[in-house]
Amino acid sequence: MARRSREVGGTVNIWGKMLNIDRRWIFLAIGVVSIIPFLVGIGMPITTTTEVESIFDYVNELDKEDAIFISFDYAPGTQAENTPMAVAVMRHAFYNDVPVFMTAYPPLGHGMAIGALDYVTNPALSVFYQRVSFEEWADFREAGITDKDELVAAWENDGNELPENASGWVFEGRDFALLGYAPVFSLVILGMTASIEAQYPQDTYGNPLSEMPMLREHKSLREIDLALTTAGSSACRAWIVYGREKIGLPVAFGVTAVMATDYYPYIQSGQIIGQMGGLRGAAEYEVLLFENGITETTGKAFTGMDVQSAAHLLIILLIIMGNIAFFAGGFNKKTKLKGRG
Amino acid sequence: MFGLLAFYIASAAFRAFRAKSALATVLLLAAVVVMLGQVPIGEIFGRWLPETGLWILRYPNLAAKRAIMLGVGFGILATNLKIIFGVERNWLGGAGK
Image (cartoon, rainbow over all chains, first blue to last red; front, side, top):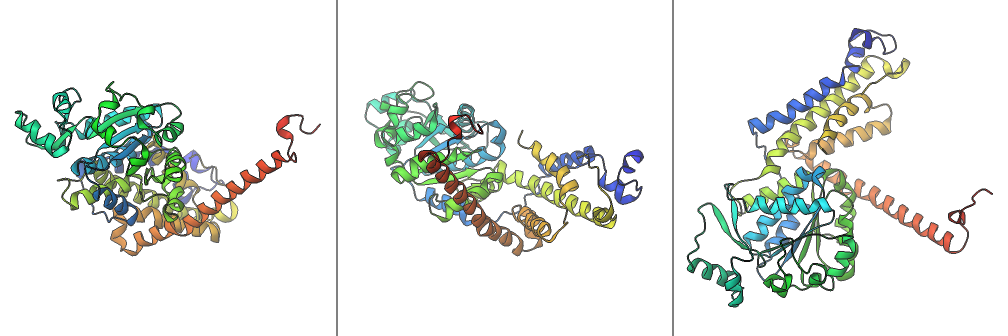
C-alpha cells in the first residue's frame, strides 16, 4: 500500500493514500451495507409518486369484465427489479378478479413469468392465491359456469375449501393464462391486435385458448384494458409502437431504474399511463397495495429499498471523500493520478 | 448480475466523479440529489430533496431525452432521404474510390 501511494505524483500523504485505496475495500463496504439492511429490516417509509399512483388507480378501477396483459420483457439479469413489479400488479389484478394474460418478449422472460405466477400462488407463503388448474374445473366450464362469482360459489359448494391463508381462488383460463414466449415478439403484439388465439393457439401448459373463458371474452388486444410491460431493455417500446399507437391500447411501463429516465417523455405525451421505475417503483406499488388493504404486508421491493438507501448513501459519501481528497491534496493543480479503479 | 454494477459504480464514482468545473459540479449535485431523492433515506433531509429529485427527472431530464430522441429521429430521416435520392451511396460499397 505504501508503495502504491507514492504513485500519486510521488506524494506520500494521507490524501494520496485515500485516493489510491485498494478498490477491494470499496467492494467490501458495498457488500456490507447491502447485506446488513436485509438482516436488520429497517423499513423506512416510502412516499408514492404520481407515475406509480396512476397505474394503481387505473388497475383499481378494473373488474372481472376487464382484462390485462403483464408482459415479462426481461431476463434474469434484471429479475430483482422487474419481478416485484409484475408480482405486485398480478396480486392487485387477482384481488379485483381481473383476468391476466402473461407473455414474454425474450425466451428467458418465459421462465420469469412462470416464476412470478408460482410466487403469487405459492401456498408456502403467508399471502397467496389458491391456484386451480385448467383440468380441475373442466366440469364447471362444460356446465357453462364461467362467471367468477358463480364459479367460486359452485366450486366451494362442490366441497373445495379455501386454505386459511389464501386470499382467494384463481382459475386457470378464467383468471390467468400463461401464454409465455413467442419468437419475434413485436410482430406477435401486432398479430394480437387482430387475434390473441392466432398467435397463441395453446398456453404454456398445452391448454387450448379457444376453450378459455377469458379468451372468449377478450379475443384481441382491442378488448384488453391494460398492457403492463415489465422490461429490462427497450423491448417495452414495442408495446407503444404496435399496441398504443396502432389500436390505442393503454400501456404502462415497469422498467429498471437506469432505463426509467428514458421514458419520461412517454408519460408527458400520454402514450403510457404511468411508469414504475426500478425497485423504487415496485416498492411504491407495494405500499399502495398495503395502504389500500389489498395485501397485509409489503413485499420484497419494500425491503430492498433499505439496501438501496444504504448503498446510495455510501456511494455519495465516497464521492464526497474522493473530492475532498482530490482538492485538499492539491491533485487538481499539479499531478496526474494513476487511478486503478 | 445487474447488482454487480453497484460495486463498480461505487469504485468508479470514488475515483472519477470530480467537481473539476462548473458544469461537472452541476452534474455532480444533480446526481446526488436524484440518488438521495430516489431512496427513502433522502426524506430524512426533508421533503425538498425527493421533490427536487423528481423535478429534475420530470423536466430537465425529460427535455434532454426528448431532444436526443428528436435528434436521432431527424438523423434517421435525413439519412434515409439521402439514400433514397442517391446523395449517399457509400452503402453500395466502393467508398472513397
